[in-house]
Length: 115
Image (cartoon, rainbow, N blue to C red; front, side, top):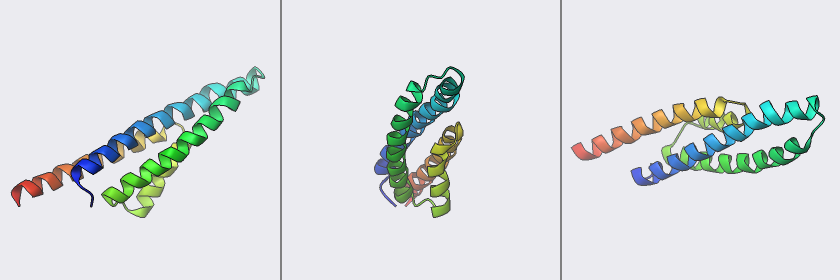
């Protein structure tokens, strides 16, 4: 496993991207898409859609980095990566991953202090 400092930095990057991707996706799905069909204004979808696409790729890379540093199980890492495609789920996944990683960090620093 990586150093606690490297994991903490990776967690901060992950949390930031999870929040940004979640907000952009919710905006896309709850604002831009309804406006496209209800008001015949596709401009927001044409703007926000590609932004979400690029941010999602960055989210995948950041999530992969965190998963490798913390040795998340493969299945869990894939599910966390997929969380960026379902509105509101990235927020839930972020809380779960943050709780888990912080617990691991606390346990490892406690073990380091004892050993």
